[in-house]
Figure 1 (tube, chains in turn red, brown):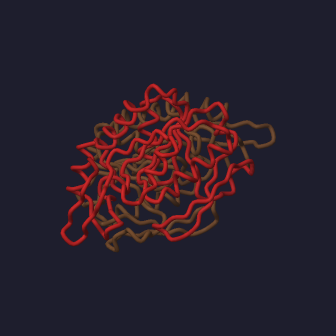
Figure 2 (tube, one colour; figure 1 turned 135 degrees about the vertical axis):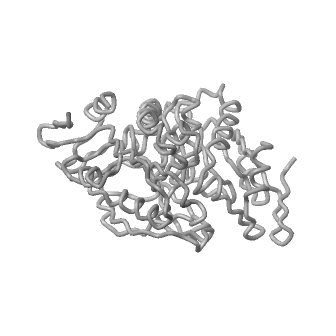
Figure 3 (cartoon, chains in turn blue, cyan; figure 1 turned 90 degrees about the vertical axis):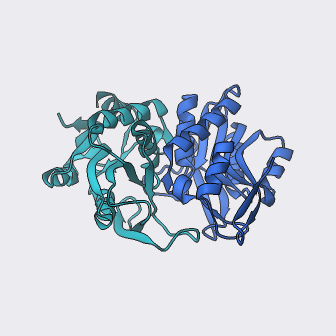
Length: 192
Length: 192
C-alpha cells in the first residue's frame, strides 16, 4: 500500500535495524484518515471470504480492527492480555511472548465469543516474529473457528513470520512489508 | 440513548449492585452497529465544539474513541497504561486507580501528541468513580489543552463522578446513566 509506505518513510522512526517506531500515526496518536484507508484495503482483499468476526489483541490492534469490522459490518473481538475480576472463567487461553515488553503474556477470549462456525479475520498492527498472530491462531484453533485471513499493517519481512504463515497456506495481507531498515542512514527498503 | 439502554437490559450482566458486565457487546466482543450509533450520538452532541483530537485510555475505550474520531475526522490519541522500550521519555504522566484490577496505574501520553492548541474530546466506556477521566483531564491540564467535552458510554449515576464533573462545568454526555442496579431481581433503573 503505497500511501502507508510513504507514511512510514515520512513519520516512522528507525530505532535500530529491527525496531520501527510509528506511534505518531499508528500506535498512540492515530491518523484516522490513514487508518480508514488501511481498513478499506483489507476489506477489498477479504470481502469475499464470508468474514463473521474480526479478531485482534489489545491494545494497539483495536483501532485498526474496529474500523475494519465496521466495513465488514461484523463484531470485533479483543483477546485480553490479562484477567480482571469482571471476566468469566470460561476462557480460551494462549501464550504470547512480547519482544517489546520482554515478557510472556497469557491472552484470553471468552469461549462464548469465539465459535466454531466463525470465519475469523485476524487484524494486527505489526508482524515480526509472529508471536501475537500465533497466539490468536491458537485461540481460533481451540475454538475450532476458521481463520479466513490475516491482515497486518506493517510486516517486518526480514523476520520471516510472514513467510512462515504464507507457507502454511494462510491468506496474509500485509499493507507494507519492510525488507530492511538502516538506522544509520535512515533508509527503509520495502518489498516489491 | 434508548437503544443502548435496551442493550444493557438485554445483554448486560449485573454482577453486584456496583458491577455491570457488558463484555458481550461493548468490552470484549463488540457490536459494531451499536458502537457506530453511539459514536454518532457523541458526534451530534459535540460537533460544534471544534474538536481537534479524541483522547481515550487503553484498552477498552479505544474502539469507541476510534469510531468517534472517524466521524469528527480528527486523530485519536491513546493514553498508555504502561511504558514500553519503544516509547519516548518525553511524557505527561498521571495516576489512575483501577477498581476493576485493584491497582494503581500510571498513564502516559507523549508530549508531542497532546498540544496546548488542542480541543480535546475525552471518550471512555464507563464512568463510575471517575478515576480514568480524572487521569485524562490531568494529562490535558499538564499539556494546557482544552477539554471541550467528555463522552461516556455508561455512567454509574449512583457513584457521583458524573455529577462532580458536571458541577465543574464539563460538558459530559453519557449515553446511558444507571441510577440503580438490583443483582437479585436483575433490574436496572436508568435516569430519566
